[in-house]
Length: 201
Image (tube, rainbow, N blue to C red; front, side, top):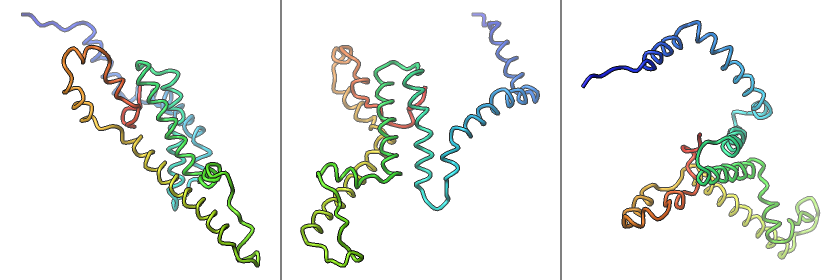
């Protein structure tokens, strides 16, 4: 059997050699990298300007900002099939929501809405009047719920980033007959959109 190279093979080699030349890399820098770099600086400017080295809250804000265009690109310009793509977009948006809750620390307001009343700040060391026990208990309930919600969402955030255990899917399909495997798309039914490593297109 004779083995021949298609003309496109040699054209590809020529293109690779050209892309490694100094003049093409210079062109590529001004044509693509510089434009993208300026665009990124403008996009992240508000977040980067406020970054401080002593608080991880600022790193979470950068992550939040970087996920926003990712969700938009996957939702409106993604090439992946619709079902898993929409699940990914939903999880990215949920991650953004949790990150904003964490950085803005608005969980007291969330707890107040759930319980139907607000923290009573009319007592304290500057009010000159001792806080009644019922007020203290009510405030404690809000603070306790605030802590629970914040911790629950923090764990949820990292479950979204980590993703599902693929071994669960393997075990699920191993228990199926050949006919059951062919009936429907079990992957899209099992997959929930989590796992940050798969958020690309």
